[in-house]
Image (tube, rainbow, N blue to C red; front, top):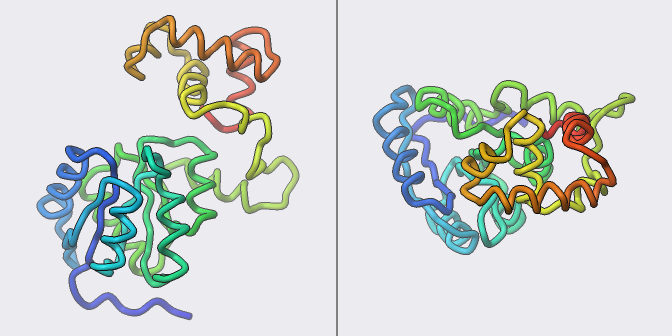
Length: 226
């Protein structure tokens, strides 16, 4: 079935637990994403419950959805909204570019996934494209989805029991470690102490039964965490 033609302004709803970030996205979409059709920010929410209520009341065309929030994040919003409002289109907007985050939110029903490094113009284009029926991804993220939904040998598994053993913070530390960050740089990036970084690395080594950061880097690369 073809998508309906977009004739008026596209109503967008923002979901992110950081108020300053929501304000910035609102300003970018309303001032910096000029185009046709125009984009109108109809509402915003900072939690899963607020998002479900707001989307139900305002009935937006597109929801810009953060993947990680303290009370459940994007997947929780999708699980509660899509069964009752299947016409709403979801576009994930996240700081994370990890394969498991991309795959999880697309499996839950989002039509695209872009990272927060996207420009105002690109974000506006992405909103218009998903509303028109396209799937939109930041560069390199589409490969994660193709792998996850492919039956070909070597495709990345949608569920990885070893990866599931790691906490979210351990994955954050591992991702930066695999990118070549020093412990002090990881601490600065994640706003934690060097001692805490060392604790997380030790925990990851124990859970993965690996011996050093070089083996961890290879392990992370194999799972597209880098």
